[in-house]
Image (cartoon, rainbow, N blue to C red; front, side, top):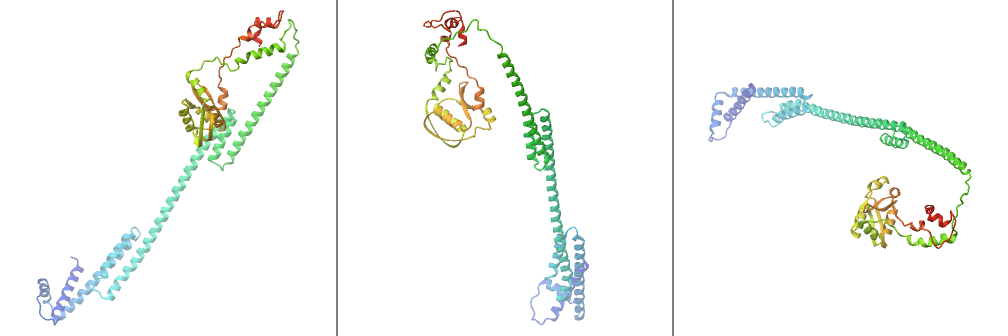
Length: 406
């Protein structure tokens, strides 16, 4: 037990003894604890009790002053590092002093004054520390944001450098259109770079110049080739033996006779292709509003029971996909007409190939060759009713293999 605590205990005993000896109240049963304190108090005279009380009060006041000074000193030491802890310590000491009944108003005010001042300083220090911490976090956030921006700029610069390296390579290969596209992509990455716009224009103008040079070279070559053909045309051709052609009536008879071969195709189709050709003549119905092309194809496959496929590579080259929107309302038309009307808006068409109905682009369809076989026997067989004699006549020319000219 500290010296201040012992003084406070003695002071309480002295106050209690004074109260017991000076009280005029009737006798009452005294609890054992009070009896012990009374026995301790009986050891003092009245004057001694008053002195002891005053002494204890002074000691307790000095103890509290010392505790207040220590708390204030400790709080000041902790202000710079832990203002919240210093404020909690001061509040604890202040709560200990405020409700103490043994203190008079003057002493309580004397003890509260340094505590409240230190509390105010701790509060200000806590606010300053909070503001400082806020500024520190803001500074760190700004630094992180700047670092992110720098990283983004660095990545953009790296990407632009790679694109420009590709651009220079394409220029060396004289692939000017591809180089222009790469420069346009680089300009999208960094729109503010004027040199990227200059690179794009350089590739474009170089492409124009290359195209013009190619056209000029082709023009010069075609002019020389044409003049060469003119010179060849100047070579006279002797009419020996003379070429004799049949009259118009013979050609008319031959044309009328060949009309039966107009729709003849000797090519043998597979059963699946034959089914597709027949299905193209069947009636169909279309009622779609912004439906994907793939869904339309699936509907036609189920309705007509034929295999329909998309040429995805040709569609991609044409800038389309299987999700291209289709809006069409048709009734009572053949499947052939419905396909032409629907696909024509997308610059697409269809072909029968490899036992499927293939939907492709017009450009790709032109590259797909289809073999057709037609009868030509009448062109190489002599016509008995025609009477042209002589070597080189019509009958002799056809019978002797001249039919190759027809």
